[in-house]
Image (tube, rainbow, N blue to C red; front, side, top):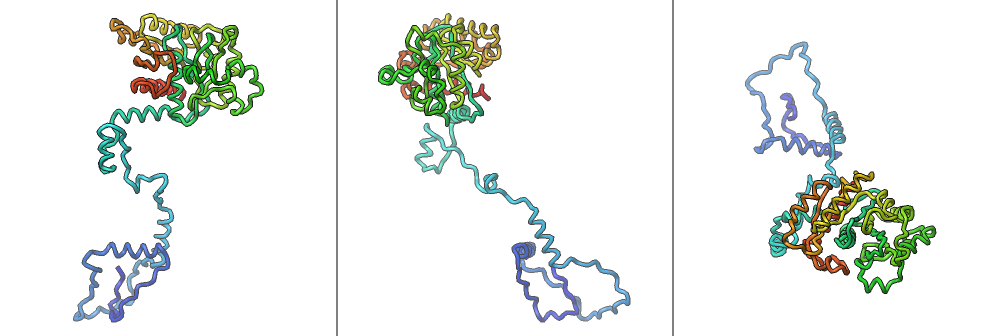
Length: 392
């Protein structure tokens, strides 16, 4: 409030000084806002009947009040050092967070019917699916390799490789690569492309790639030796039975080193057994394992034997962090206690995931995600998320 001098005539009202800066204008606004709503503070004047006392010869010292220019400079300095809200890194300060859009079900239908006016948010099932997608699609630093193996054939090893590979290709920004290292004329590419389509293409195999590997110095050059099932890139195994078992550990490591320069995720279909020529190179370069098993008693025993073999041959870490996948490929008899088989395996691996019976897997032909049951696709998403979890 301004100081009123009783000796000064109030006849001429003070003219507001024009503010020359944003800081001075803000100061004036603050002074107005600090006044009561009834108007400016009343001016208190002394009674005219009472004479003024004589001024003493020596007036007491009055502390000097800061001038307007000093107050303005102080306020400007304070504003300059005050933190300014960041519209980019802190959008929540200015915009209310919007619920994610529900997809499908009653919540999705209600959202569509009301044009987004009623948004109950995603259901618990949708939140779980979104979390699986986040885990699968996370960014990776470097290149990683998952080996898919078993001691018994015909229990879903190759179909798991294709199903998980297609799932990784669906959710990840970078395409994955699948390598057929099966020594027994593996059919990885046939299961991903279909027998007819594969026969129409030129028979490029892992043997052809090894023969010309020194000249492969780019992804374009590597693509000449690969097959593509959508965004899943594949290296076919050797089909000639006379040379299919000739892939050595050193040759596989050369293939793996080449692939690691262009792909962040690779899957290797190892074939049946853990003692063939290339297996030591595969296990040496693997970051984690998928152990394929079945609900038959023999399949469960062989999966457990595989884990014990790994642990006793220098691969204890791989065995402990392995993901066991039980595929109900043959729709076993109701006499088989599935819970007992799962309990038999679950305590000796990082995670156990069951793939339900599905004709799209059991037929031994082309595996496509669109033809699979929702429960089967969900199982492959869980497997894909589990192996990416093992990379980080």
